[in-house]
Figure 1 (cartoon, helix red, strand yellow):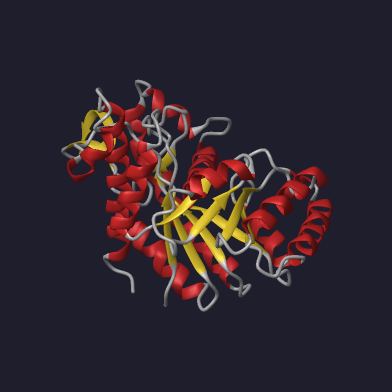
Figure 2 (cartoon, rainbow, N blue to C red):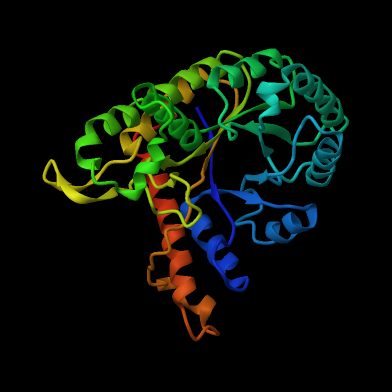
Amino acid sequence: MKYKTLGLFEKRIEGDDSLMELARLRFRQAGLGAEMHADIPEQLEHELRFRPAPDTPVMAHLPRGLNLAEDQSRRRIAEFASRLAGRVCGMVMHDCPDLGARPGAYLQAARQMEARLQESQAGPMLFIEYAAGLEPGVFARFFEAIRNLRRISACIDTGHLGIWQARQTWSQTHPGQDICSLKSQPPGLPQAMPEVDAAVQSALPAVLDLIAVLGSFGKAVHFHLHDGHPLSTFSPFGVSDHLSFLAEIPLPFERHGRRSTPPMFGPTGLRRIVAKALECIAPAPISFTLEIHPTFERLPLGDAAPLFAHWADKTNAEMMNHWLWTLSRNYDAMRASTP
């Protein structure tokens, strides 16, 4: 069974387009496709100039503020679809609370969007991402209701769903408390760790369950693959996910002979997620994007040094290189035990 694997393809680090040339080089070396973010079609046109190879699969991530229930957003999505026809393998947009709060209106909007997408036979599919923290059953029921729409399907974000599940499990014994607030490392954290572990370990079954449900609809599914942990402080944006599956979460105390704890999934969980997707979704198309954020560590440029000969300070280039290396290592972990 063949599937597409992509990585997050953008700067995220300050600098000129030499950083994009570095991304092009590393993605080509790794054999990764590219998921590109863009607020307007012209921005994506610029990023497509750095496509690693002519046949590299590209997924377009649309602006985060779009709401399928709004006609203006549907017009913007249709514009992206028209401009990108034949050039990308799909488009991703976030879901929103309206999917759960106004299911009838959201369903009607999806049917209207389908009609607009059908106007272009070569246009890309639209994948709606689990991002707003809805109850997974609500998310799944929407896609069951639109199972007959050919151009709209689901994007499962493993980190978003995993953190939602960890929060739910924790709240069952700690009403009104957010497990992610524990990243401030309160004094009682060492004693709370067994309960933290139980909440974190509930994440993988939740992801596997949603894959099984969505896979039963016989449609293409896209994935945003990344790890996370409620105690993570890696992100400069304050989120607890978008981590490497190879990460370890530092602890300010020793536990089980270590001063760190594993993330929600780790390499074993990653392999189980991919295996479950192949089991439940195939033969419908499957695509994965490693949506891992940089941690701003540095890695020498090596063979890419000539790209930055005009840079006096290579710090940002080396941070970009470390991020790209991390994406490649996670791709290697995916391939280690999959067909």
